[in-house]
Amino acid sequence: MDQIWNILKNVSDPEIPVLTVVDMGVVREVEEKDGKVLVSITPTYSGCPAMNEIESNIRWALEEAGYNEVEVKTILSPPWTTDWMTDEGKAKLQEYGIAPPEGSSADKSVLFGEAKKVMCPRCKSRNTIMVSQFGSTACKALYKCDDCKEPFDYFKCL
Image (cartoon, rainbow, N blue to C red; front, side, top):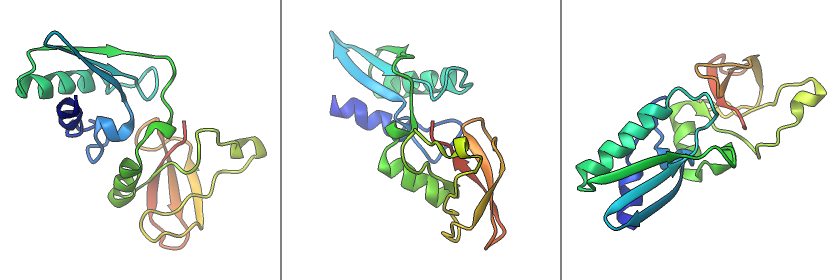
């Protein structure tokens, strides 16, 4: 089973190629029975356009490694949250220039009419403002740092 997980640790997320599907927490379970591999995945949100490509990339990586019978099953419940991202994945986001999700998926700052202050991935300042609730993808918000003046994506807590 470790061999299969190690293969999956090399399957990149198509929208954020610095992350793998394991870093993202998209891979929920791996089973091997009678020579058949079953990989269960959960989309980051139900309309995620990358899921077909993720499924194909998982299947291709395992078949290239010699696993001839591969099934990828999508599981919608429980829904994916940023809590499932690995610490290594969050560090990779930071290095890539995307502010990783901070705290748990239960961000209630919006209830008080204020945007979350997140750390700038470039200069590490918290003197940041949200420019738009939506960034380069639906799962990210666009922020700007008032210290270094650079815009950056923040991977929203979901």
